[in-house]
Image (cartoon, rainbow, N blue to C red; front, side, top):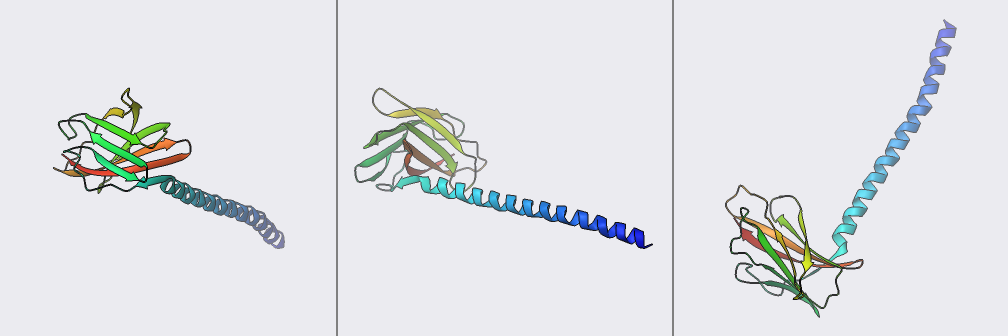
Length: 166
């Protein structure tokens, strides 16, 4: 009987160190993933320098402006209908920027509707344009947020513009 007790004790000792190693590795991996996720979220939220809106604006009546010092982002939707059943023409004009890329992200302000990002193309008149579409929403009226991002190398400057659509 003593031999079987020794074998069981020896087996338990062999399992225990490997289990401890696996638990430690898993703990380190989870800690690293948590740190990486938090770092990436902070970098994403801090990376865009958001310009304040110049004044309250209704996108249906004309362009909206975000500005600070010599920088200005003018955002417009040049479409007769602002609803999810029709394409919308997005337009951005810039003052004080030398940009590599301009994009607009459309999101539901109060309800997650996905991230709908559109790259705008520079036109001969200096403006940036593209055609976009609002995701279909089951509510009658929804508030959307357009976030314009202007890329200048590693620097990203933006403006946010809220508007309502059906």
